[in-house]
Image (cartoon, rainbow, N blue to C red; front, side, top):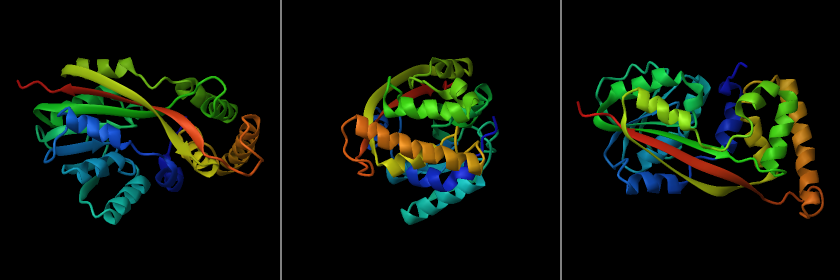
Length: 267
């Protein structure tokens, strides 16, 4: 399955929910990240994590391989009055200096990397005692909920996507192993659940921006999928007692934030 998020950069920037404030509060309160830290954000995409850390006093370098997403990231940072050094590079070969960063993050992207190689690259560019942070923000399919029905619709268009990514729980033990095998110490995790509100239009945009739809299907297929999803959402709301078709009440989409963090040895 060929994935190109540049094909869906507009929807990606407009409709994908960024990490919530509570995530940033938690990593700062626990001392994982501190104001003044030098921070590299791998797979930065539209710069959600990069901006969040820059707003909180970090000096941030953002890395990505999508020129379209990097353009969006630069625009968002400029609009927010933030300075972020965005660079075009692979997470597995960043070109960044050895032993330089206090923190290296990867948000919503670890599954796209050659994970063992990326973990070693994190370790290379971190200072001794620096921390690696892998964060993920997953929608959660529960039997019969909007996410479950949406994933099943994606499956009809893109069965390979469903086999690899459908039905996930938002917890990824293998990623802890990635850091352990790269030589990181003090591996810790935390997670929390929350509902994210979406209008029908925003949920359709969020799904168009997903790897299984806009980033991998043809333009014609995306159009047909979006039309079917629109109809499905209207029927779902009527069945749930949400009013007449077209009233478009707010959907509450369950999500799970999961975080793995670990320390580079001092030796």
